Picture 1 (cartoon, rainbow, N blue to C red):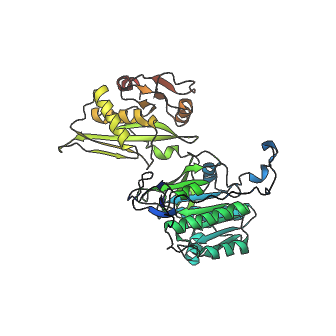
Picture 2 (tube, helix red, strand yellow; picture 1 turned 45 degrees about the vertical axis):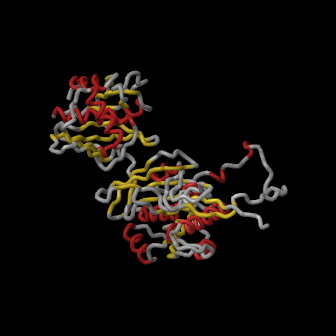
Picture 3 (cartoon, rainbow, N blue to C red; picture 1 turned 60 degrees about the horizontal axis):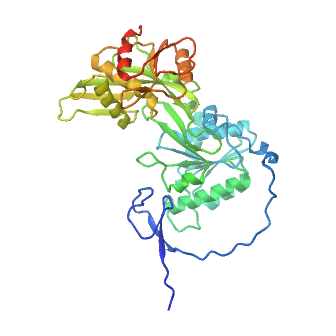
Amino acid sequence: MAKKTSSTYRCAECGYEVAKWVGRCPECQAWGTIEERGDARPQVARVAAGAPSAPARPIAQVDVESSRAAPTGVSELDRVLGGGLVPGVVVLLAGEPGVGKSTLLLEVAYRWAAESGSAALYVTGEESAGQVRLRAERTGNVDDAMFLAAESDLSALLGHVDDVKPGLLIVDSVQTMSSPQVDSSPGGVTQVRAVTSALVALAKERGLPVVLVGHVTKEGSVAGPRVLEHLVDVVLHFEGDRHSTLRMVRGVKNRFGAADEIGCFELRDDGIAGVPDPSGLFVNRHAEAVPGTAVTVTVEGKRPLLAEVQALVGKSYLNQPRRAVSGLDSSRVSMVLAVLEKRGGVQLGDKDVYVATVGGMKVTEPAVDLAAALAVSSAFTDQALSPKLVAIGEVGLAGEVRRVTGVGRRLTEAARMGFTHALVPPDPGPLPDGIKALEVADLASAVHAVGYVPD
């Protein structure tokens, strides 16, 4: 009797295995990604011990100088990367179409070629070489050590690497590259995984920094299999509003530095430039105090940034009042509104409420709760807050104002920007000079204390 073989099914996105086929992956919740993988219980052969490529040494004797990060020449990007590009690092830069990914990477290639003393190879699969050359000429990013190739075949890309022997490789984009050994269309799950694996192996073998450009889905996540983010060393998201010149590079994963740093850039007609002091970009300076605005200080990585929260409250003519949020976590804002109505005495049941940040900034940390509550309260009462006041604190369901990390660092930035008063949670720790802190224990006392802050 022939031996019966059993099959296993694996998700092409996350690699999760199930015993039978299902339409939706139980792990990553993706639809239509379960594929049959053959025998579920393969025979594992015994592996004999082999000669190691290098003897194991005490960790203190391992040379680290050859693994130091080399600056790219773009300081804001180096901040997010943790100092620069480590030899053999693979960076995935994802962003929406037209946000400026190619412009930024042309600047990186130019700086690398001009300052590092080694060549930079830019391989494009989405545009012709002439189109990239025109953009480089417009932005002033042309150097003799910059090499450009328009290829979509992986074997041709590897041939260019052998010919040029660059110190930096940029691939724009990984979804347009295809491997001749894989029977699949370019951009498919199998092709993207194979191309990325080959480029990762190339980077590690030669110590070559590789930057990959990735597409994003409609939800804003990196397109392609989820394993793509696990293969690379660094994942960066390039964010920005089409109608604004401000761009932000946000670290999502980083094996060589902090994973929550951000870099700020300004997209101009002649290229892209870093913004080393972006605090003023997210705060509107009004000639007179305006009701419905409150300023807070958020921390992105190690960088404190001032952020302005604006709110508008009006009578609703709908059966269900409208709640609109932009730049903040909508579920958290809904919670703050409920606490403000229950604990702060602000009746919003028949009101339309609109809450947004200024300058296209996205704030997700709980430290913005108090500022959002005060902005809504100010819009409800039509009484403006002091333009010299910042509010920092997390609001709990019981109405208490909780402590957040780095209050001293936040207030130092606020004092530098000219603010003189701050509402903070109890026991905030050492505070800087130049700003007066008012400790508030709950939301009701915070709303009451606002009236005692001088303009």
